[in-house]
Length: 458
Image (cartoon, rainbow, N blue to C red; front, side, top):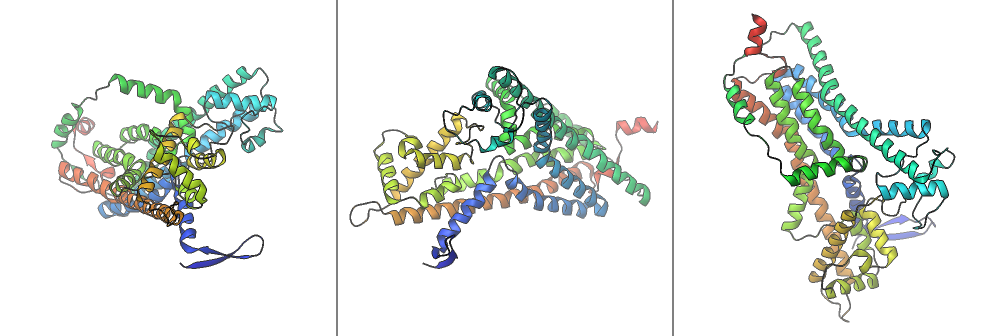
């Protein structure tokens, strides 16, 4: 085994196995990428996707279309990724400093009440972490009973996050497209570019075929939408995917309605609609598929490192409990409280042990299921040591191997997502325009000979 030397805080040279160091580094990186409240995973896809789309546009429409596409993608990406958090932060600061309503807590009845009770009375019976609440130590908290303050917090948080979402949609769906079109128009006036007339009688048939397909709403779908609306403030503050998707649909509608002609609207709909999947689901879906096909159990990336560095007695006891269990058992039944809390804390990206953060029962249940399945799967692949005890060395090597393979599959998922976003979707949109019009030109500056244009001519 290869080693590298690093110096500890005490000044002693300590040998660290390279594969241990690599496994931990991979865990930290994947943990950061998969954190649902951070945009880093999407940002990995965003940069090459923007460049790829700009290149595809440049190939078709030259510098004019390429420049417009680059502006659109970069400006939209900045607002899409960071708009809601920034607008929401501004709203939170307003309510905290003007109305004296504490806002740094998750949108959950239980969490809000526990946090407000602590801020008003100093009570923390569960002995959870309060470090994120230190900002309120020297601030005046809204007067009134605990129940009154709880109602104010819920109301203000709802107003803040919904306002942030609306502002984000307006910026992406209307302001940025209109501004971008204005810049292109000014450029055209300078260049005196002649617009091309594209005739496409087949588009109406295409439109009629697609418009006849009406969506059907079942009772379950309506209930799901209702539940989503009720829980949206919590989801939007704590899940980057929800933030992005919640702005995608309004943005898609806004971009289509502000398009300069129906072919540009069609291209925007194809690219933006397909992007919802590639940005938000493709990488994780491929990772899960490849892990399933290779029988690799998925757990939180940092939990791999927790297991790889656990002592033999802890692992032996856990595997024995899982093997003898008649049904799925929870993490806090498998391990002692300290070890279980460490797993829950990593798996919830630091939320589990904080007073002002909320972990849904479904999330905890999913963690329990993943850890149980992991221990069950790995126990079947392990062999006993010579003395009949658990082979802890084999357990650690299997854990590191699963960790690296899982990360590798995620990397493959990102590569496919980037290809879909940067190349496949724009090429598909351009191909459909070509089939409908017989032309392969920059639709944004083309003049289309349809009924609306004929009315203008007359």
